[in-house]
Image (cartoon, rainbow over all chains, first blue to last red; front, side, top):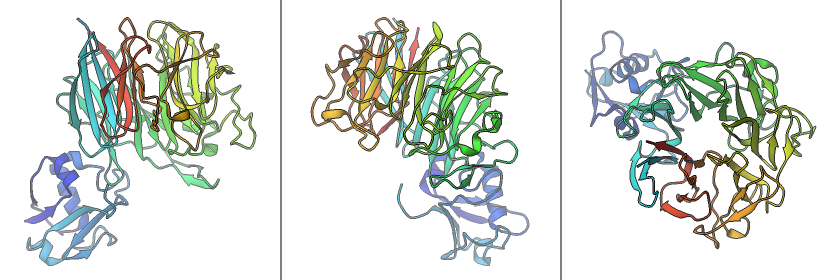
Length: 98
Length: 371
């Protein structure tokens, strides 16, 4: 079970409260987590990455185990503590308010 | 008794204002999509309870929301706006080529006849069409591809297609306006396009008589005279009496011919409204007095409308999509300001009163007249 923390605007869009829990078969990567997230909540398509190119939106960041993994390749395995559900995969908007 | 619904997009959400035909008491609902920029909310003339809202945020991109119950409930529909083919480049602010990149939807223009058809004007400038109520979008790529696209450049607000005007005689004929490229028209439903800017002059481009490169802020027409077009440009208020073949300046006695919105009275095709602001650098009314100007002669001769509008210490702006008319008689007029006020006039502009005073900055105002 993968734990995902979404920023408040995306929680509102997806109509979720608290963490999202996902089951992923195979490698746990940014791409597989986002694929699973968008499959469950289609309203999130396009909000974190471009729908055509899958490129991360510039002001969206991905954190894992207190590290910014935003610039890792999307198929890089996430840390074991994320893959095992001990730590969440954190999606957030870059600093600067809004 | 008729009802009026005013759809307001703001920097931090959408609001729906409703009143009966007297337009004296208003109900304010919202914010919908709190915290998100709502560039535009537009209702379908064919099914007025159907409406679309452009919801965006620099962090998380573009969503399109649709309501089928007059704005009470909403659902996200399609938000995939892919340019057709190789996107190519336009000019950046510094004159270098810059890749076309989708940023947001500035404006929706629903078909008057088909509630499933809606057009979207977007930044970077392009025109999209949906034939399934907004679930999917396809670019009318002939506009960007007609030849001058690589020379287009952004205005201060971005390179946006902000105005879509459908000819009431024939939906295959339409006009769009782009900052800063100008007006373009099609007669075949958007397959082929041509510039329609003869007569415009802009000191901000190297050839002031060039046909492409003008920062057109807004165009409007009256359905009874669809060959008469009105334009508020970066500077100059213009009119065309030949369907965009040529333009003549009608700024006349305005205190400033810089502004953003322009609107035509619902029942008087020669009655036109603008909201002058001081200059391109000073986006507020001259002398700190918010005055809507009305011409009953299709331009040139203008009168200030001030009763009920702030006449001192007022330094707000009215953006290009933030003035609208309703279809009642007398015609109602609505302006939304960057200070968060929405002013309404139920007598064609003679007198005004605020519906609300303290919304977030208003980006757009649309008026629906309901039976």
